[in-house]
Length: 377
Image 1: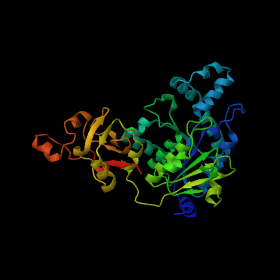
Image 2 (image 1 turned 120 degrees about the horizontal axis):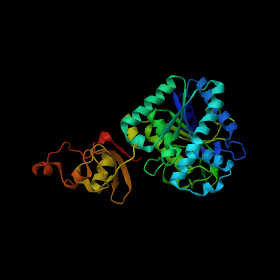
Image 3 (image 1 turned 90 degrees about the vertical axis):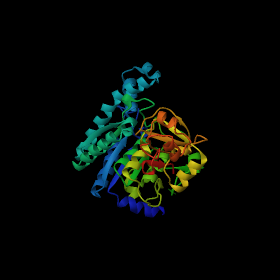
Image 4 (image 1 turned 90 degrees about the horizontal axis):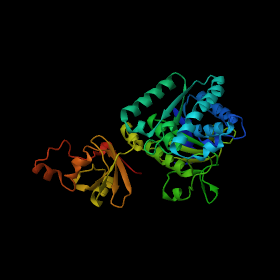
């Protein structure tokens, strides 16, 4: 798989998710604090995709940034010194309506009907809610509308947040079975030693080491963009990190210009819808497994049995999504557990046959069945 082959795959896409960051959208020199020229470019790029019969979903940042600008404009700068979660929630509440108003004004002049979708990580924890969000966005697309997705920062807590919109955008790509995720950012692409990397067939620890930290007014950085690309690769989608200040970044990419960084794994068996959900569902607790269980899970694709579990961490119930860790604390994966943490306490390290011989009434042999498990790539 090379860059040109990946571009050809994107050209044949039925659906694409675009993510745009705060640094591109905000402009403190503008009266309302938003870069309308950038949004106009974005509109034209989406129209270009529509002419190619490619459905589009937009994931946007910027609500807190617009809220901050509004507070400064009202000469309430002292209020910005408070960086608490509740203050960030308030800023997002102030800015979100203003942000959507600008999108509506600019997009609907070109008959692009916009629809706001606000999501938290908790929405992705509950599978029924997750599926309902997908149904809503599907209906918007059928009506010719453009879903504009943002994390619901007005109810932001550590438990409820994705952490950044890069990961949220990859979650939307998985939910909607999009073929590609295009991340528009303020840099030219992923770089190693200040040299842009044009193509990656995977993202590993070496790439993460060169990613650096966050820059600009947003919460993400190159690390979160590469993490989003990792998740997209697992769910079968292509990712691109593109320079958002280019006059036509998406059109130029599809027409073969050497622009940005493409992350494209060879097409393999696609994950089931349930396993795509598991990539993003927040876990409630975890189990720590021994080396034998780790090998069985990772190398043989086995289910997780009670005999391989060393201990439980946190409180969880049957049907919850929990994390699977090896003894060192490194995450192996996650899955839907068949027992609560209290039920597992009496089962740890024991074979199913032993448990039955002791008179335990087991409703499943597996603690986590392999069909309800996703492993780290």
